[in-house]
Amino acid sequence: MALLQLLKQSSKLFYLSSSFLLLAIISLKYVFRKRKLSYPPSPPKLPFIGNLHQLGAMPHVSLQRLGEKYGPIFSLKLGQIPTVVVSSPRLAKEALKTHDLAFASRPQLLSAKGLFYGCTDMAFAPYGAYWRGIRKICILEVLSARKVQSIRFVREEEVGRLVNRVAESFPGTTNLSKLLGLYANDILCRVVLGKTYSDGGEYDRHGFKKMLDDYQELLGGFSLGDYFPSLEFVHNFTSMKSKLDSTFKRFDQFFDEVISEHLSPGRKTTENKDLVDVLLDIQRSESAETPLTMDNVKANMLVMFAAGTDTTFITLDWAMTELMMNTKIMEKAKAEVRNIVGEKRYVQESDLHHMHYMKAIIKEVLRLHPPAPVSVPRESLEDVTMEGYKIPAKTRIYVNVYAIARDPTVWENPDKFDPERFMGSSIDYKGQDFELLPFGAGRRICPGLMFAAAAVELAFAQLLHSFDWELPPGVKPQDIDNTEAFGITMHRMVPLRVISRPRFG
Image 1 (tube, rainbow, N blue to C red):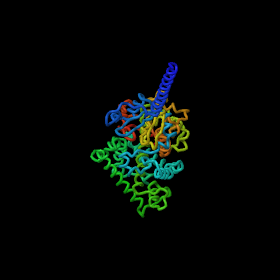
Image 2 (cartoon, rainbow, N blue to C red; image 1 turned 180 degrees about the vertical axis):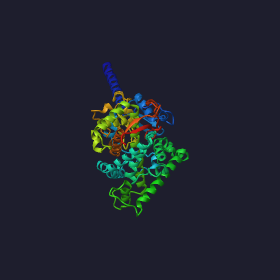
Image 3 (cartoon, rainbow, N blue to C red; image 1 turned 180 degrees about the horizontal axis):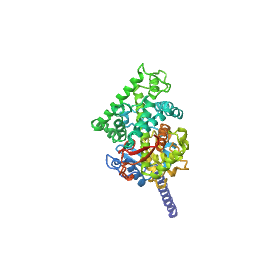
Image 4 (cartoon, one colour; image 1 turned 90 degrees about the horizontal axis):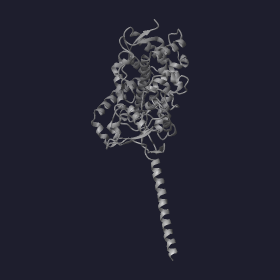
């Protein structure tokens, strides 16, 4: 009897211990799974504002430092908005290639909605049929390799005008940044709007520089409604709202003038249609695959006009600035260009294929000074798992291009301007090498990549061929002010002033 009771008690103890063990195993599996699929690591948050206070005046630098502390993928709560930041080539590839479709959409930012007629442009439109349609139109009509090649004459003519403007300033000081801005703007205006606006004071009359500066500042600036959607109404009482309205009205009035000119019965048409011609034809067509309203037309005029001007200008401005600060690199670049071009006065586009060092300089400029140091945000369309972390739908995704380009585990002496690193290297900026992403990658890669590269390379080579460059008397390379103005793109605030000595009479 005693033995039977002992066996019963032992059986009960075994059952209880087995049950506890089973529960422990299940609990551990749950904890492990929860930890495995938790949100990426995050710095401490403050009530209400989350991590907004940690962005600082230069968010790309602040995010780089946070990445060094919390890893190549980390999360932030920016007000009410869940956000994930990626800052390594491997994770950038996972975000922009492996999960490209899941991260293919855009958040509806207030400034973008205000400037781009409800985000109906190809840069900020949410992922869907309309975005695919408008992107296809813009690529086929302006940005494809065939179209970029067909407008070679535009680049050659505008480079010629740039050379003349620079030469006219000698022997005085040249405000090279201003002339590079005119060059970039003239090319875009001819291809998108049908003519240039730099002659006869039109550039200044329209206030293009102020409009473009305000555009990039608004898109990169802080807007309460972007981080606190529930408080979006407060945006109506801020100074940013008035600036947004003012900038939108100036662009809108200008585009109304352009459209009116294009619709004028007496306007002469040419074989090479500009983007406005193409968009207006589609807008008036009843059988268009992608129907367009007049607001849609103007939204895409703006994104092509502004984004294209900015990218070309910023790259050229930094390229010439770096060479003025690195005279040995300047001399080597001039020697290469002049050896290939010879006694001809003008560089031909066929010459560019042989200028390997010049191309390496441009890659190095795009590495150290990407026009958009933090990618335009994407928004997840569905739940995604990366690195064992769960990223829910409606999360904003940023790729810190700046941090990747200065990662010492990826680049030797990352803060040094050294074009030699690209000599003999297959790394390029076309979206396949995730160590170098100035134009992004995947579905949302900047479609103007080839257009910008062609405009930058020809102008850069021509400036090296046509002029000998030096700083004004008393100015040393270390005196150059490279302070940047943060916006959706980053440009130097102080113009580059140089002495440009023409080689040809």
